[in-house]
Length: 244
Image (cartoon, rainbow, N blue to C red; front, top):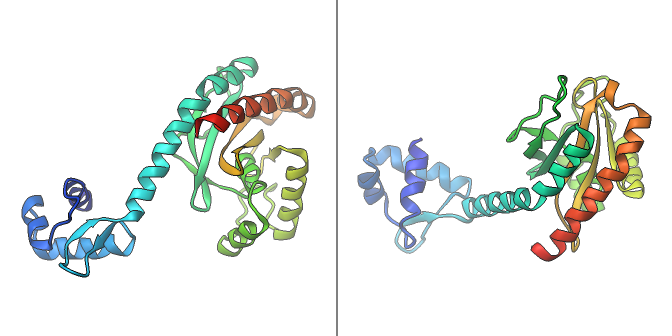
């Protein structure tokens, strides 16, 4: 919370402030403030002027704020279409966006049925073993995929999790050709989902999914839901083309 107080104060000081003034305004010990500023500078949340040693908010924090605002815009834009998909299927509908090397759930519409998924808004999940994550990976360039796989560890979450890089690359190629991804209980036991990426003008905005317990999402049911998911994707992408 002390670091937050510093950031909140610096948000009111566009020209920056020195350590002593920051300590006085935040009512903290100068040594504590100095150490916190060093850490905040290291992660890019504050910047220190080389001319007068003043600190001001850094681009790292601005980037996070921008991404958060964009996520809120995406939620508002997609909500009517996600609500309709949820109503048409009575199954759980998700919206997720990229967050570093993972995805983060930013919207969830629950099924009214008694057995549901355990996901929640704000929760993160891996890309390589979730439907939405694989859908987004399929929208990566080959260079982006190489960097992604070089920086992550492929952990086993369930008996169905694919942890072999070559197999995952083959799976991603299939998703690119089909236009959608299937999660066969690869991250959560007994959960299946259909997922599609959200792209517009060569930019990836996130992904949506329709999820259900395996006993409610057999192959026949999955194939009956697939056109609804793809239709929802098209409606959202048409809006993205003109909204951003």
